[in-house]
Length: 390
Image 1 (tube, rainbow, N blue to C red):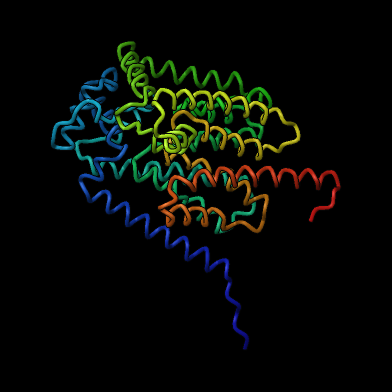
Image 2: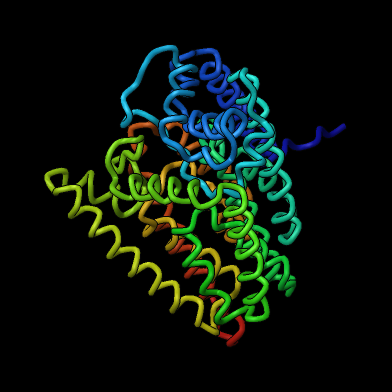
């Protein structure tokens, strides 16, 4: 009687997935059980905005004084204004935020985490359904992607950005202009990334142009009705404070973009010079994406993958949790190369265990993804042209 051979890939997938899950749960429990850790996350800004809506109304949600007062009540001690974590996201999210926030900070955090875990999982399965086949390595590699875990740990709304990008890609792929337009409008929660994605309207799905502007217009009008002109003034003031790059948790040196790279490599530069470099790079990134979108010889997946990387690297504001979007080009590569189904798991495991390379690995991942997408694209073109490939 012969024993069935061990499936090495299945064992690897199960072992790495279980290891990641155990570490994630342990870190999350440690964070939520520690008062200084759970109140030092980005969730504090969302909590303060939601409670400000309940206590003072939508028009006062962006009042920095109210946000500071609420955060002091949670912390149990006074803070100075520059230590306040301001809520900087669009007003149209405020009804969703206030719905989940109560006086109980921990319970609010838990509800918030499960909400975005659900949004991320649903969006991921929609993306995976467009790719084939849905191998276990792909499914677990997507659901356990390390940057997304960081967004949950911080209480960030990255899953909404991710959902918007997935809907936008899905709509283009299925030639559904409404889905593409609405998905693209949802990415306006990170308007500095929107410019790169929106250029697709000019070259791929022009039918979605008016649907996108209609959706954005509705969101903008809804925002204005919610917070009115006084609230809009406070919102723009907070955006201006954030753009200055100073205080309020901005921490440009920790960013995983061109600005962060410049700040770490050239710490002697003045902050104004670093930001000038960043905005110049942003213009370069938008210009580069224009040339990517207009390439007729590139597949849709190659274009979307490359432009996601351009948008992230050249973004004027980017932290680790926003790297969640990199799972999309990773999945594209896994589909193109049928031998790399475990790649997302390997990437997450590497990002987790190589802590000394925290500020290095994301840039290596940018470069590897660009190289992989271009290489696969060239191979695909070679096959179409009948050129023998090694």
